[in-house]
Amino acid sequence: MKGVCWSSSPLLVLLPLLLCLVGSGTADKTDDFPALAEAYAPYLRFDSKEGQGDLCFPHDPQDFYATRQAGDWSRQCNHDYASVEGGKTPTYWHAMTCGYHLHIAYWNFYGYNADCDCCSGERDAWWEFVVVKIRDWKVKPHMHEVMFGQKQGWYTRIPGHYETFNQTHPVAYVGKSQHGTYHDDGGTGTCCYYEDFRNPGGADQHMVTWANLTELKQVDGEEWMSDSNTDWWHGLESPMFREDWDLCGLMGCTGASLQVCGTCGCHKSDIGDDPF
Ligand SMILES: *[C@@H]1O[C@H](CO)[C@@H](O)[C@H](O)[C@H]1NC(C)=O
Ligand SMILES: *[C@@H]1O[C@H](CO)[C@@H](O)[C@H](O)[C@H]1NC(C)=O
Image (cartoon, rainbow, N blue to C red; front, top):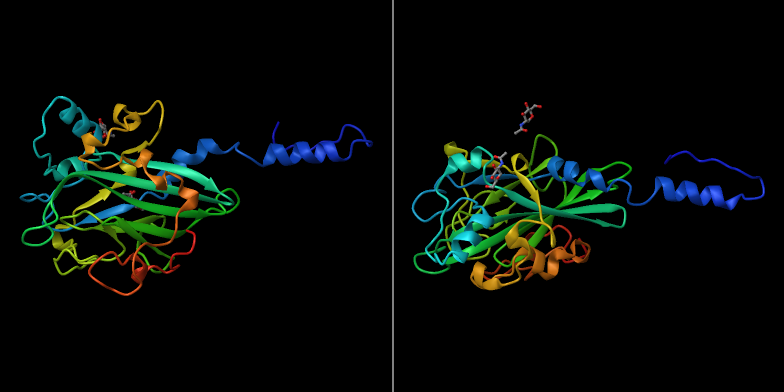
């Protein structure tokens, strides 16, 4: 019976204390991870043009994987907003306890990234992430830092410096060509780090990621999850095989602190490159 502290003998003062600590302490709440993942899952907002031409919505990676395995190497682009709005396209998550805090990473897959200017940047297969930090997750859980990933880099924002939807869901604006996630809308439509267009406008296309969440697992997950062959993803490592699978070792940002065209995630990071 966890949570009940009893003393069987006045001579054994320490033992009940230890039993008590073990009972109320460690991993007895792991079952709550899916519920927490649902509670803090991001609300994605897409550009008004997403879904048109070669601008793609999130894609089911298992479908993509099966298509490639069947020898079909054609471009895969999800144009179907109904599949996104209706919760039929999955978002993936995995969580790790880091000290008193819980880090939850959310991943979306895209079949194709279009050029970010007239003529460069396109590629097949792309993964993007958002990571949330739930402080004091056992005692008094509250979402604090949120990390936004984009263009092989990332940056971290603190509460008040990102938007939320229904209190607990961070809002991430998705770049229309390259699908990076940003805390704000805008962009000027170039390939520079913060410039991919993301203007939801009246179309207000969005994704309630918690409508379809699947846990990433290195074993016993969907077929693609345990396959380390990067060929299926056109040379990319899938989330399970990346260095940042260890969510406790994340740093707040990558790249320059000055806004340059190349990787400059630290320019918009509220915690610099301190540990996340
Ligand atoms: C979630 O996505 C999977 C994979 O595309 C799909 O099979 C499933 O039906 C979706 N779940 C819901 C609730 O729509
Ligand atoms: C947001 O909150 C409102 C009010 O509680 C609720 O009716 C609505 O279903 C929520 N939206 C989503 C997408 O969960």
